[in-house]
Amino acid sequence: MIETFGYITKEEKLHTLESDLVKNTFILEAAAPFPGYHGENVPVSEKPHYLFFVTRKDYGLEKIIRTGVEIKKFFHAPFGARPANLKMYNTDYPAIRINHLESYSLIGELHRWFTDMGIQFMKRKQFDDNSLIRVTKQFRLEEIETGIFRDLEDPLMHYVEIPTHLPWKIFEAITLHIKNNVSNNNFDAATGVLFIRDLVDVVRIYEKDPGIERLRMLRERYLQEMEKL
Image (cartoon, rainbow, N blue to C red):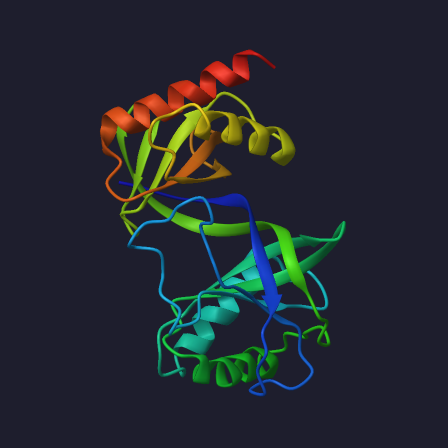
């Protein structure tokens, strides 16, 4: 088992949460996460998907994790909290990415806990568009084959190693080309970095039961397209 930190970069549509639970505060939701995948295991809508509490400044990894750990001593429901950066209309916004929250009714209480712990949040803005999202997170992985990793906390997540970082627009174009040239294009892809062996650049694949042969094929397709650059 490999335990490490890293980050994932992806593009998803975000919208301002229409809720009276938190007054005049900028909270965004990814209502349709993993847009490239249309399988039965996409999270359902009766619970919050991924939420983003937009902060006034970048508090950094340690501050956000420490604050989340302290809140969990008192908060009566599970949640995850990790620092994120949102690029919206060419402007960067620091945020706290919230997941695993069981109900929309818990948002207000959780938000107040962060406020009480000294986190300051931006005032509400209206947004309903795509955003480039970078989330810093902890990983628990198994390297099932050299350069191919399985996420031990989410069975739909796998990571295939690539030789170098790809800027998002290039990655997006390569992914679209691959999807247009494989028989089964039902997967969602994002870029990432894992801090193992110094650092490893990866493509995150979101798909139910892809199997090792499919992961090898997808990795090889990315490698082939990168050789053309």
